Image (cartoon, rainbow, N blue to C red; front, side, top):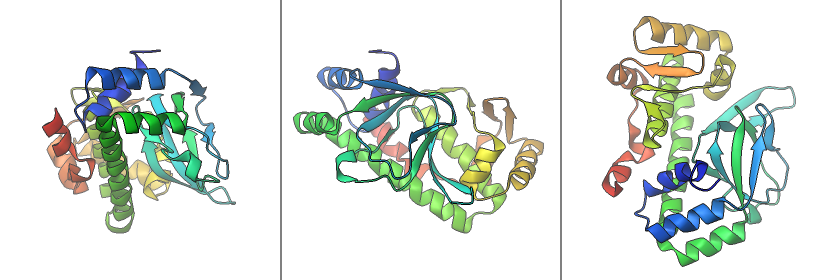
Length: 246
C-alpha cells in the first residue's frame, strides 16, 4: 500500500512542517507495517477497551463518540482521511470513549514505540505531529463553543464549513464539492439536535442557495455566506501555518 493511502497522510503532515525526502520515506515505511479495515457502523475501539496502537486513517470516515446506557449518542469529533488518533496508547489503561467507523475505514496501526523512535530521529516529523494534535484540540474547543453558543442553523453551517476546509486542506475537494457520507442522524448526534430539527436547518440552507447535498456529495454554493451564517473563522484549523509551510 505504499504511496497510495500513505501519501494522503504524508501530505497532511507536510502542511505543518517541511519534510525531507527521507522523512517522507520513513513515514511510508511506518504506515506500511500493519493495516486494518473496519466495516461501516462498527467500532474501531470500544469504550473501555485498552488501546494498543497509534491509529492513522488512510481512507474513510469515522468519529469519536460517547453513548449513554439508554442509547443516546453524542459524536465528539469527526475522523477524516489523514487523521491520527490515540497518539499515546501506552499511557491509557482504558479508552474513555469509543471510536466508530461511519464508512468503511482503512487504518494503519502503528506501534507506539515505533512512532516514538521516529519522532526522536526526525524532529520535523515530531513538529508536524505536534501541530496536528494542536489542530485536533482546537477543533474540539470549537465544537464545545458551538454547542454552547451557536443556534441550530449556525451549528449545521459550521460543520459543513469545517469539513469542507479540512478536506480541501488535504486535497480531497473538487472545486466547491466534497465527499459527505454523513446522514442527518449523524449530523444530529454531532450538533446536539434532533434529526427533525437538522432536516429543517438543512432545507433552509438549501433554500437560501448556500449548499447542495445530494447523496454522498456536498457542494458549497456560496462559501462566504455560509461562513458568515456559521460565524466560521478557520483560525482553529491553523490554515495560516499550513500556507506558510507550503
